[in-house]
Length: 527
Ligand code: GLN
Image (cartoon, rainbow, N blue to C red; front, side, top):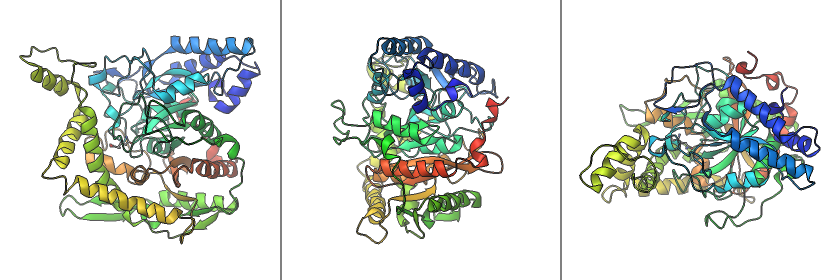
C-alpha cells in the first residue's frame, strides 16, 4: 500500500507525528496520477486516446500543492497546529472556483476563466491544511450522469472497467478517489451527481441536507437543489471532511446557521434499535413510454435489489430494526418534476454567461452587442446547456408555467410529504433512515446512453427524491455485479440527520470489513 492509498484520518495522524511529511504524501499522490491518469481533458481533445487511463483531471496544480504541503510541514516543525486535514491530498470538481486557477465547469464558455476567489468549501479545507492536487472533469455544468458531456476530452473512465463511464456529473471526482488520486474529492449533487458516480466507482458519496454546506463559489446549476458534498474511500473520512466544509457562511445567506456536530466522534455510537426502512417503490424503474406517453414501471435488476436486502441483513446483525414495505408513492414522479424544475433553474443561471464580463467571447465579426451575445453563447455552450435553456424557457413561459413549472413544484411538495411521513417520530414508521439502491443499474458502457437525454436522466431516479425534499443521502459500496462493477446502496435520512446516516454507514463498513469484496482493487491499480 502506497501513502496515497491511506485514509485521510490516518494520514493526518502520521503527518502530525512526523512519521511522514506532507510533501512525501503529496509526491505519492502525484506519482499515482502519473501512473494511471493519462492526459488531462482538453478543449477539442480526443476521446479515443489512452483508453486504459482514467483521465480524471482537467487542471493539475502540482506547484500550488507543493507550496501547501511545505506550509503544513513547516507548521509542524514550528510546533503550530497544521489543521484537521493537515497534508491530506484532495481534488475538486471543476465547478468550484479556486483563486487564480482555471475554473471551467467542463464548458467551453468558461474555458479561459481564471477565478479571482475560492469557493467556501474548498477554502475551508485548505485552511485546515488540505492539499489541492487539481480540478477534475465533470459533465458540462453538471448536466449529465456519465461525465461524457464535458467539453474537455478525453472524459473520465470507470477505474473498474475503462470501457465504462464513471457516472456523473462528478465522475472525475469519484474516479480519482477510487484510484488514490487524493484521499477525497468535493463534488456537487443536484439530482444524484455525487451519489450515482460514487456507486458506479465503488466509493462513498455524501449529499448533505440542502443548506448544510455553503454554495458560495460553486457555479450554479439548480440553485434550489445543488448540494456540495464529499466523496471518500471510507466513512470516517466522509465524517471528517463533512464537518470541515459544513456550517454557516456570511457569503451564502442560504447556508444553515446551525451548529455542526462532530460527525467523526459520533460514528462510535452503536446503531442498535435504529429503525431502517425498505420501500418497494425504490425497487422499480419508472420510465415514460415514448409511443403511448404513459408512465411505465418495471422491476430493477435482481442483483441491485439483492444487494439492498443483503445490506439490510448485515445491519440487522448490528441491531438495527428493519421495516419492510414502506410506501413512497411519489418516487415515480421525481424525474419528470426534476426535468422541469432543474431546466428552469439552469436556464436562469446560464443567463450570466454572455461573453462580456468573463469567459469565452466569439472571435467572429459582430455588428452589435446582441449579435456578440448570440454568437458567444452559440459557440461557447455545448449541446446540454442549449437543450436545457430551450426546455427551461419553454416550461416557465407565461402560457405554460401553470401546466409544467408550477405543477412540478406541487409534485415536489408531495415528494417531501412522503419523507415527512416516514421520518415522523410519532408517525407509523418512525424511521431513522430509508435504505435503497443508489442506482437502477451498475455503470453503463461509454457511448451507450450518451445522446439520449431522457434515458440519461433516468439514471438519477432513485437519488433525485432527496434533492426535491432537501434531505441528506449517502451512497456506500455494497458489493459487485457479475461483471465486477461496483454496486452502491443509499441511505436517506431526515433534515440534518447526516450523523445518523454516517453511523449506519460506518456500522455497515465495520460488519463487512472481512468480506471478500472489500479486498478488491480497481484492476487498473494491479496492472
Ligand atoms: N444527471 C442530472 C442531470 O442531468 C444531473 C445530476 C446532478 O446532480 N448534477 O440533470
